[in-house]
Every structure is written in C-alpha cells, then in structure tokens.
Image 1 (cartoon, rainbow, N blue to C red):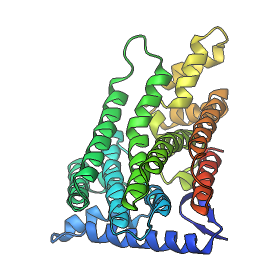
Image 2 (image 1 turned 135 degrees about the horizontal axis):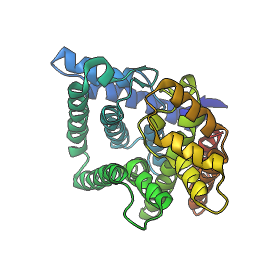
Image 3 (image 1 turned 135 degrees about the vertical axis):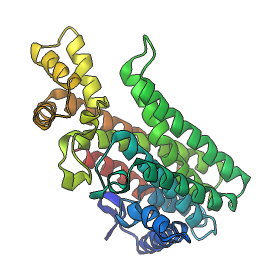
Image 4 (image 1 turned 30 degrees about the vertical axis):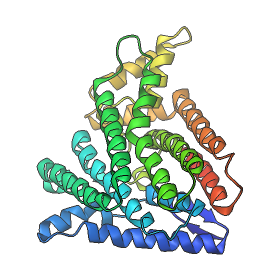
Length: 337
C-alpha cells in the first residue's frame, strides 16, 4: 500500500499506483512548462504557487477518472494541467480579493509583489490554460468555458449575497457549487472523456466531482475555523477577518435568530459583525466559534455531501479506481475532523 495524492490517499493496487504517480509527475512537469515565459520575472511570479506545492486534488481526480477508459490517452495529462492552471489562477485572484498574506505556507503573490501583479499573473495562467485547451478540441473548450462561467458567477453571487427571502445556507451552497464544484466536476469529466470512457460513466463521474467539490470546500470552511496555519497552509480565520460568512457562521446566525437562540449566540454574532481586523477581537471570535455547536453542524454537512458523492458512484463497476474515489470521500470528511 502506497500513500499518494492529497490527504494521504491509499492506493492498494500496484498498477493503479504506478499510473497515478506517473500521471501526477507528468502534470507537474506540464505545470512548470506552461508557466515559463521569455520574461524571467513572469516565470517567477507564475511559478510562485506551482513551486509552493499544493494537494493537486484536481489532477488526481483527472488521473483516477481516466482509469475508466484509457489512462494513457494523449489528452489526459494536458487536461489535468488545464484544470490545475485554472485553479491556480483563481487563487491569485482570490488572495487579492481577500487581502490574504499567506497561501500554501508562503507569502501570497499580492503580499510579495502587490495586487496588480497578482491579478495579471492570474490572467497569464488563464491564458496559458486556454492555449493548451485549444489543442484538446472544441468540446473541451466549451466545457471549460461553461465551468469558468459558473465559477465566476459563484464568486459574484458570494459578493452580492442572497436575494431577499432566500435562505442564506441554500444560497451559500449554490455559491460553492459554482466556485468549487464546477471545476472539480470538470476534472472528473475531462479525465473520463479524454480516456474515451462511455457517456454514462462520464456523466456519473461529473456528478461525483460536483458533489465532492462542494464537500471539499465545506471542509475548507471548517478548517479555516478549526485548524492552525501549519495544517491549512494559510492564516486561520481569514474568512472571519474579511467578513466572509462561511457555513459555520451562517449556522450560528440561523441559530441566534431562531427560537432556541441564546444570549451567547447573539453576542457572538455581534462580535463577528464587528471589526475583526483587530488581532485581539479576531482571536476572541475565532476561539468562540471553535467552541460553538455551529462548527459541528458544518462538519455534519460536510459528511452529508461527501456521502452523496460516494452514492453517485454506485452504478460504476467495482474496481480499484472506484475504491480510490470512494476513499477520497472519506479523506475529505477526515480533513474536516
């Protein structure tokens, strides 16, 4: 048994292990090649987060989904590079919007070089992803364009907030499906599609990716509250400091506004609504939310979405790749504690 990929995924089959390891190594080479420029400074900024590492969650999913067809098909690795480049580009932009100082355990690009350079580097990565995508055919271009539209729409909806009368939790889950689920779904879809898997298998794996992506982001929400910077690779409570209401906060608000809400619930809501740029207030809010039942409720939601992802896989034939995909559901839940 060898541990590969994010979260210590265990691969128990030597052939699958070799395919996954070779696939991820090829993706890593492709990422470095795709982020090279004739301008040395652009290469440095574009490779900043590539070299910082990361879970390579999406390339892993491409590689595993490709096992349901020909995993050595020529489009598999380039499509994984496209998905990861797109993800990396969004991180550069996210860190500008969040005014984040740390990403993957290193200084964020905006903290190191400023907002303008970080935004432009993200744009550069989008351009390189598009260049690779063009060689994969018009269907791949259409799929990526639709996913990118959903991703941006999710970000806009998060910024705009729920419309009047909309349940904030339902709105937030829609945001996550767009911001995260869409690209994870594309990773699974590309892997299956590029490998020549049948249409039914492609559809199943796409649905699985959508649900797993949402569970993955919910686990991140929990980690943002519950972890330290060593575990998450970024500053804990970043969303709190920026006033971003993730699922634990939304559950807290719902509880405080309901008949079972306590004075302590309402006091914590007031604290979170205040100025959390002050380090002492931020630490107080983070500690209080870590001890609140709303965090455990968010963990349960993460488990539910991961279980839904696993259930989608049921029609697929039993094989080592399916077992690995099921294990990823467990790994996502484990991340959330």
